Image (cartoon, rainbow, N blue to C red):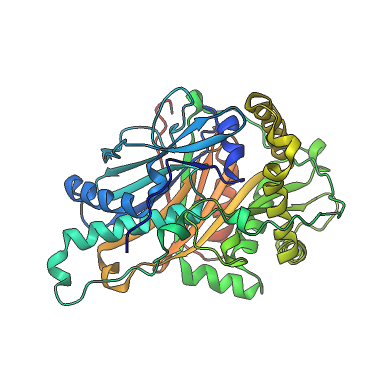
Length: 423
């Protein structure tokens, strides 16, 4: 059977359209997945693994070009090359004036890192790319260990499935007539780091310890951590702004609600809010309130409305014929409005699993993102949970209060942070 080639160009999915006009030095729209191995990374073998992996993810060969009406992906002959990590985390990948790939693969000591421009993929799709890359690296480096039986990856989506634009697939044209509450969220303020740098602070803790506390509060891990983060932010709010709600943006993997194996963007977002001046403010009350918010907003109907809202841009004839330069202005305004409606973001990508035969060669996984405010990412691997904060602010008070809350519950937390040159 002859394999069908990827077309020379393809459309950006509807979530991706927001990123090119809103990418800037203060927020590059880049996120990073990393895998720490038990032995130092060998560059030559990592390059071999990348050469294999890129063939399995054809969209990753693309660059972004701008047309008269829309941005689009164009197939490129640029060969991705593994590099030693020597740049600040989440440095820019997209430059409208330069033809370049939208991801990079780096290594440092025992760590393999993949940084990806958000227009190319969401966290779930990017994680599949890194998992595949690590799988090929380990099975090449330790091939003598797998003579009798080769491990098998559980992600076996076809090329067509990986390239699927699931926003278009599940677009229904149903109108959302519900009235949305317009909330202006509390905005974290403070001195920013120089040169648009971001500070990364990671807390590593035993998964069993924290899940015990989650069960004691009869809730989910995401709601438990979101509640602690909200309370940590509240302690930073000046008295005059106590009436402003703390609003967390929670990305949702739509693949859990709609059948999809796409390696592209397919995520939704729900906002959950809590006004500390109107409620009790203790952890139990925040958890109870957020559980109601999640129950109301995490429904197939509400998530389908999200899909319809994004896909409607492409199905509206009037919007389609507006020149790209004007669309860019509109999308920047829309992004600024959305930005005012949330205080921070907490993203839980869940448990990361690899074939059991190769787990012995892997130490950990982690994820963090670029931001011009404060954002938290959560993932777990083996028996460890990682909560990674990225921040554009000099102050680390919110992050420290968050982790101190966990340690006060007898949850041991190891803190890891990057070094900022001017500190």
